[in-house]
Length: 563
Image (cartoon, rainbow, N blue to C red; front, side, top):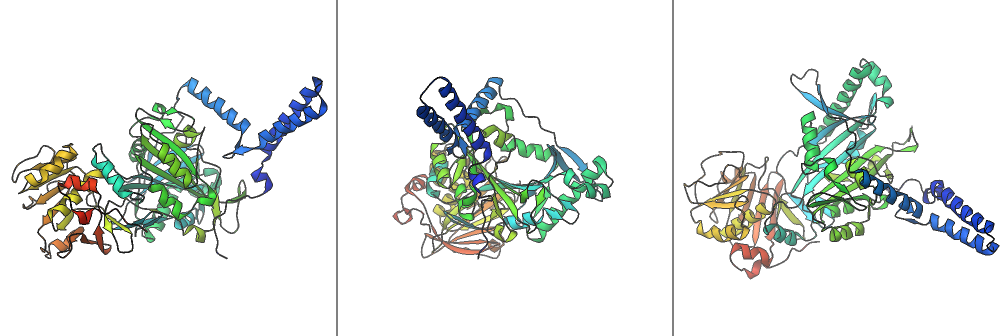
């Protein structure tokens, strides 16, 4: 029998806990007693008492009516008091022995000492995409994360795998065009992944004592545990680095768009800022699988955060399972501009996600964990993984219907070669602007680019200059395109894209990080090459994109075909 994730306790008291049953019975008894004291007919009093009891036992999304009323009152009380900042500990740095100048950032979260690893994808790779599947060589396997919980004499209370992803970025209309073209593909252009390691000193008294005891022993033990996790993941191809205190603070701020927690206004079903709405969900244990995790990334929005907590499963609090089973809880935060979250909420609930109504602030900002967890062995967890980075932009589709995406700019991409027509070069550039690239084009045919530049209408995102001329936004560019002109060398940290004539394929070109070669026989066929492999794809587009390119090509007016 294949081991599968389970939802844990399936007893009758799990479905109908005493915390629900006893108050409901008490309420029904009280109402019935009052009616009898008021000389109401006995059958009517009994029937009313039973009805009140049954009303209290019926649960909607895991809560009975009294719980919902109590949560509504608590929310109203919190709103009357204002959005007070939760008490949090500031991160601090700890020097790393035998590493001059190196420090690890740490922070207390309740009784746990937390350190943070940031995953760093090793290189440039293509990603294959289907509506419920993501194929990438760079993943964070939850099975290996689970094995990091027990380390010789040290035990971690839990590891949070946190992924923050963005499908598109910017304010111009090309973004909406690109989202329409993506359709149901889980194409997260940029994704940052952190591992938050939670170390409980009370569960590691002996290990702390062996390292000097007290605060110094606690910090040293947490440091050793963090280094062991990083080393184990590295042996399985997952590169990471430990964040400093300043970097932990920066990551916290980035997750909240630079705002403070108290700036977010709590509502029953979301948290709202000036123009951003954040909505939290819990993945039901019976729906925690790779297909649902992929589908979450396919829902359009400002950004999406997935938090998977892996912890040792316990038969009862404080007792570990002898067969090394693990508990996994999955929380999702989906952000939208304004209050446009209705479509996203419908799509996410259809995937099996449960809105965290009434506890948005406690979970999204306070770090509280949802009680529903899936349980399974390390073998079961091998089916779950988080992509270690973003996929970049979609180029086309393979013969079997998988979308192929590659990054064409970013710190890992130094040089891109586009060998083919102007349309392919402009299509690649336009999609790069839709996922956040700031592009400056140097061309010997600037008039051919002016149409697209004018439609984008945001010079910070896309501008063009004449050969030898300057450009206002060159210094801030993340992608510099050289079309028919020689590059001046790597003058900044920006990625350089060279546009070559069809058929121009030399040894110099083959050394690029990403190569796109248009077929001389079929302009809709492109050969994609990265360090991770090669693919032949059909370029996909929609009429809205062709409008930016300044021409209509009926052969390209085909929507993405996916499996």
